[in-house]
Structures are given as C-alpha cells and as structure tokens.
Image (cartoon, rainbow, N blue to C red):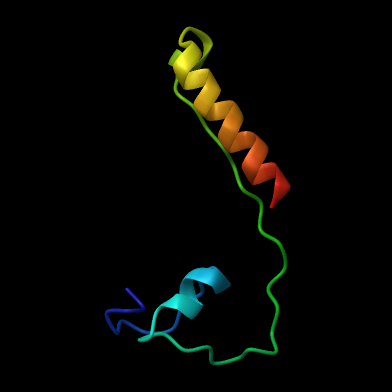
Length: 64
C-alpha cells in the first residue's frame, strides 16, 4: 500500500531499498526487533514433506 501511495508505513530495509517509489523518511530511527511466529497446520505431525519445510523455515528465521 505504501508503494501505491496510501501513506507512510514500515517495511524490511532490503525490500524498501529495492523499491524506487519508496524512500526512507527517518533513516536514523531503528525499530526494535519484532517477534516472528511460525504457525503450522495440524498436518505437520503426519506429513514428512510439510515437516521438512517447517523445519527449514524455523531454522532460517531463527538465524535472522
């Protein structure tokens, strides 16, 4: 919505910096880290494929 011109918002720096229509208005302000929740469908317990994807995402998000 920010790219579409609906106003001020916040975004990940890497994503915002890639978008030419977006500019930082307060570059000196750093937001505190925000929690990330990874939720999964109940199938996680029965599907090895779903479990692999979930474990991969949990690992990568945990590194951020």
